[in-house]
Image (cartoon, rainbow, N blue to C red; front, top):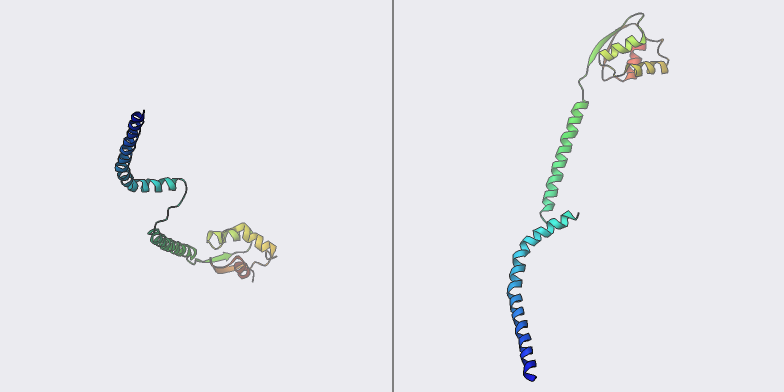
Length: 155
């Protein structure tokens, strides 16, 4: 019986040694070869989960993108400024005897001095200027406010 137990234990020892040698030979090479690929795969997997993976060169990219954004905003602001700086349109408007408020307002809209004829008529009515409109030729421009135009044609 002693010999059977010794043989059995020697078999277990041999099996353990073989398993250890195989693990030691296979394990490091498998881990090192898959480490580079698994890092990239892990980064993709983490990003898909909604997390941000920080990389040191990202700061430079962020600064470059912020500069580009500032340049785009500056260009856009200058375009908006150019659009708002319309050309000054000067027109001579003649108001004749018997013209209605609507005809006067339509003449101002035709010459692009005002945008809304109804708003101009409402302004004149609200300020009791409808009866003070003078007959004559008036030199007006599109940079004038509605109140300035009304003041000029009612004096």
